[in-house]
Image: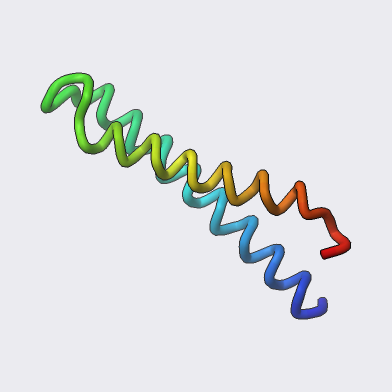
Length: 66
């Protein structure tokens, strides 16, 4: 594996981990419902999912050429 392939694989793994953490935070916020529906955990979960999905989207839009 070249350095670029290792970087892409690492970015993919970390992005998927961010999405998983975000989903977990959102589920915890909804199931626990401590602090109401709009809690800091729900907000952080949405932000983690958005950041992880955004990184994956940008990586796929760049393609394998760049």
